[in-house]
Length: 241
Image (cartoon, rainbow, N blue to C red; front, top):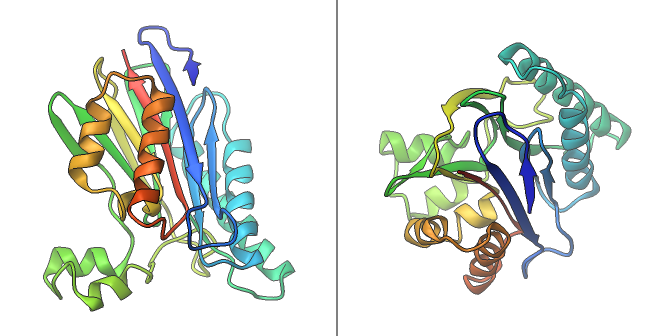
């Protein structure tokens, strides 16, 4: 667990990640420091997947510094798109892509969320657990617009159809979302290995816990394994006091 310096709030962060039972390696990337909680999730199990996650996280975090502004974050995501596509070219055009989702506290009560792909940010405030991000997938559009039942084979297949991700040939922008930090809040930044395997009520119960954040992060990952471990699973938590 790390403490994030802040002039008015007490901010603590922790994270955990696991390979799971399906894939030969962990293609998720977890980053925690006093600037950002961030996760990346590679697409597939190839070297392109691994290279995309490593490259996206290294480029994004290297661009942080000074005041966190929308302009800085847009420029950082543009750098990520450039560098991940370049990594793909070096691999001979192999699919090289990943999600990138980050929560960045500032020196005020404001924090920024960067969302590209289908990793997620949740917030528990009071007794309400909310999903703050949108999945950039056909499954999300299908669920919102009633194209098919959320638990149908079509919906399952559509989860793998991402419209926005790092390394996309059209270099799409990320969503930038401003949120306030209030004492009592708990934020979860996670890959779909958590979101797709640990149900809403289990996530809510974990985020309501007063246990140390390292224990909660580990419990979330353990729940993904108990659910079958069908994907790499990564969780990063921020507690506001």
